[in-house]
Amino acid sequence: MAVAKQAVKRSVTIDPEVLDSLIPDRKVNLSATVNEGLQLLAALDAQQAVVDDWEREHGQLTDEELRPYLQTAMQAQVDNAVRLLREARAARPPRRRHE
Image 1 (cartoon, rainbow, N blue to C red):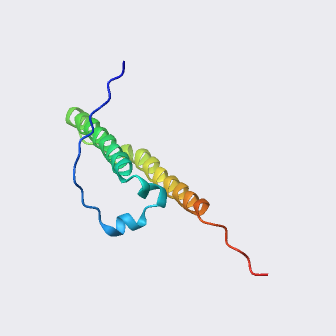
Image 2: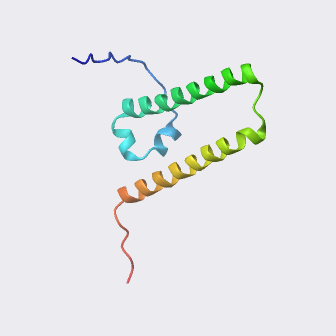
Image 3: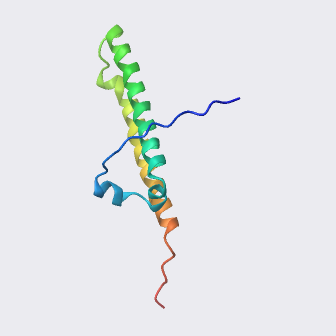
C-alpha cells in the first residue's frame, strides 16, 4: 500500500506582478503552481550539485565545454515561452474580424 506524503504548510508572499503574469489556469491552484516551481528549482539545484562535484574533481568547465549545454538550456526556455504563449492564446476567446 502506498503511503501518502504529508504536505508541509508554509506561508509565502508572491510579488503581485508575478501573480498577474501567470496564465489563469496556474492561478486556480497556487499550491500546485508553487510546488511545480519548487520542483524545477530542486532539479536545477541537483544539476548544479553534480557540476560542482565534477569541477571539484576535474577542474572548472571551460566556456567551450559549457556552450552546448547553455545553448540547449536557452532553447528550452524559448520553447517553453512559445508553448506558454500558445496556451494563453488558446485560452482567449477568438477575436472577431471586422468585415
